[in-house]
Image (tube, rainbow, N blue to C red; front, side, top):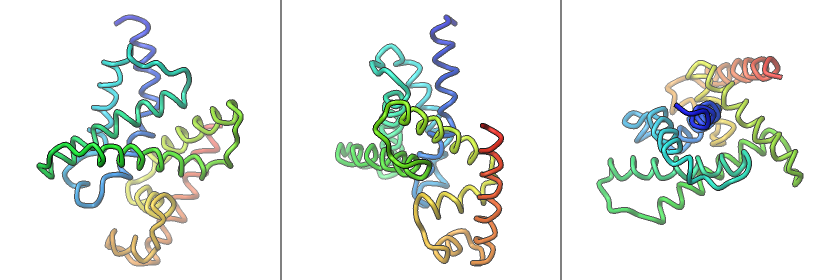
Length: 188
């Protein structure tokens, strides 16, 4: 393997948890049992690696946008496989918009918007750190946090979805946030 390909592989792996978080946010309850977000991310990174010479961006923000577009196409393919529908370009574009929106919400949650390139780079780096830290949490804590803070579900709806009591979900959120803070502080 040449050095450029090896560098691409190392860089792309930095985005694995981030892409998995975004994919998981887009898979509704209907598809979560049928489509694994990790499989979609693996396919996305494989395609990005195969098409690495086609990437014309210059920076992490553009690379993330490029990876989100590839992920959106893979999500659309997964939806088509289960819906047996014809290709719906509008749905594919709406998936790209949804992924961009999820990414934007993640970025807004981390910092206030700032137009400077260095602040933008810091925000992208922080989003990657949060995604990595979320990947380290136990599944129930991660799911509760994502549903509450990214999907903005009320506690009662999360409790119903997860088959837990309101107090149990509140406890998952409290422990998850505490552990997330610890993980993020150790990464600094």
